Image (cartoon, rainbow, N blue to C red; front, side, top):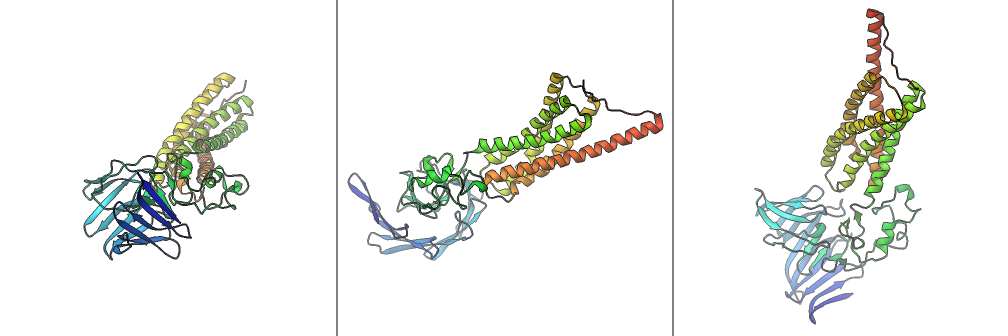
Length: 431
């Protein structure tokens, strides 16, 4: 199949797509150049041959790819067998090195390079993009292969080449159909694509993302490039969609777990429904604050954020969120105590509050660091499972603190009985 692009009745580009839906060659009549693209037996684009309009070769570019990654996988690029440039990655490309020296990339949240700097931090190039990736304010003093969302730049075709197909930033759409979607997955999705649905519902409930993408096989991220990104040219990853739903679910789960713990403990100690209610409501506020803020932190971080960063932020921030939740829960409990007329031994309760602050901080540091590495592929499930796990271990830490506190209290009571012939009694009452 051939596609011709005209401007003011003048032929500008001519694209040839093969039987496998791949861009095979490009003719650029403005520059008088051509490009023939090379593919491996696995369908990966491994280079191109640049020539004139009669396809006479002038330059050969070869690429070495990391086949363990579906995108962001260019390891080395050579021109005519020389001038090899090697690339280093975290999730996005970090740096490039060749005989001329080294330079480093600064990337945005979509994986598009926005700055190119040398080893001293001096700026070499600046890159700007609109929502769909059309470049503006870009300098080209250094030749480098990456463009919008990490796609390969092709100056001859004017297209951005994803691993699967070519994308036109000017049109805001792909130039060929998305072959990933077919009658078997266009309604319910599949296990390979990003989905907002939990895994047990996949294949059973219609998937809105699958329906949206399969309804137009040329569109880029369902025409929503601000909230979505398509890294491989096959299916999108949503950046913000369902974040509030996920955070809300985790907040309810975390609050419910802590409410049950606080309420059951209060009932065992007092058998008073007013004290139990007050403690349960305070526990819900405590656990909901801890889990909700932790979930929000993980949800707003892009999925490609380095694991070390997620672990560090998770541990540090959750270590702050947990004591904050304990404080909010304590304040709520005191308010409901006043509302329901509950009388407590405030000296004992305040000592418990101090112990809760300490244990929650420790559990937050531990669990906040562990939650990002829970090996669950679906981000919604990862957040929910990680925060439920955190809630359960929070209960464990709380109960361990209670045991220590009970042991100290027993020791004090015993010493007072032996030395002073008195007995310390807790006076939580139910009017």
